[in-house]
Image (cartoon, rainbow, N blue to C red; front, side):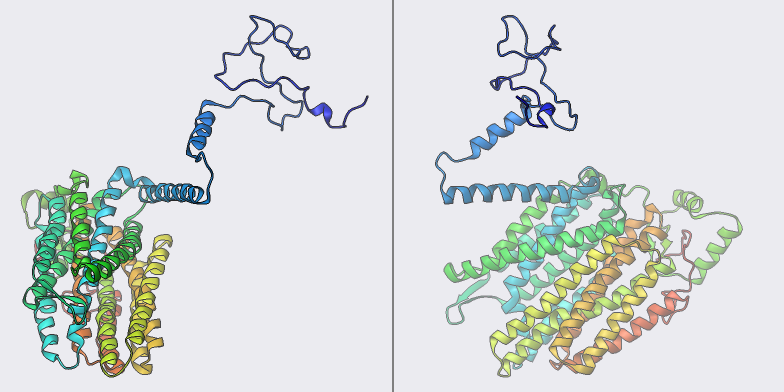
Length: 569
């Protein structure tokens, strides 16, 4: 009887073997004969029968030990009695485990776990979470109380204890942190620990208002504590920028590392942490009449302080680092010319002078200074938008608008800012930046044009679009600045350069936030004032890029790469 035409591709049936450990196989004497159904005593198991078609796997192949363990684990996880609830719980657990695995894969990518970048990522996320929790806990009291039309004195108080002191402190933060020779991990942890103490102080000085159904803080305690929390947050950002070069994986550059940290902080810290703080504030303040957002802040800050001490110890050492300086005077230029005439490059000059003098400084090159001017100008707009829209919406509500419209207004602008920031960092993390200074100039011009358009049209749709553009170009400009620092400065000066650049950017943000509080809640007036200031900053950025300057010693009248000098301050 003739079989199926393809039957010759398959071997004859053989009895199914019981699962179990496979003993060592040996070739039987009658290997060429057809298998029988009975194996004689003392004969070892025969090799798996293979088909004449080498593309087909062998039939009745014994599963490996790993396959058996996986099958047993799957069988163990399956509930004895199948129900919809149990299956849903099992699938939820599997999805959660897969998500955790993906999270660990993302945080450890490119060798981040070995370099120490993963250990730094978690404090960065928690710092954003602490900031989000502070915004949630103090929203009604701090940011909106000053926007009431009938309490103009609160605006002055807000500026007096929040904006002005930080504007004075910020210029000294970079040089002060340059002098921290050891203990950077402790300084990072202290920025969290101080915020825990401030949160405890605020919690012990609050009371529940049954009429408004809110928790209110003592204003004489609230405003100084808010200032201190802001300073601690900015100090963490400056210290983090100085630590990043020491945990840099060899396979990626500084610009992409900073973009990665920003994305983690934005999505997980501000997004997830803010949602947790909002839930705690809403639930605990309603049920237990306590500031839930402030308790969430404490938990985030304690975790941040603990995780800061898990950063590798090598970030604490500053041996061999050469601080940077923003200014570039005529004496520095003459010093650089003398070194060029003698044939001394930056490395030999640094090695010779650094051994003899402790006040050796590396002036920032033209590309880096261009990035600083441009990014500081953009931060003025982003800082202005952060507070001005909140005050504007509150003023509109006080004038007769509904609370729902006010909430939607803030939500639309906040969503535009978040999406723009996410897209900007995503693009910056994937693009090659051959001329970063030029990208900064273009980003600054785009932000300035957006502010002018918002001043001309003066409606919320345009404001939301401008917020999206400003957040996007701010992120892209920061990536370009990081790329300039990496390309133009030696390894020994990058940590100091990142610290000083972060200080300048934070100062620009604070200046814009001050304008957001001071200016009247009329869109065209607010944006026209900010646009006028940004035009000056844009002109300075363009002139610096071309080798000129409006400000002596702080512009583009300097080379791209400046040798170390003793004349820096």
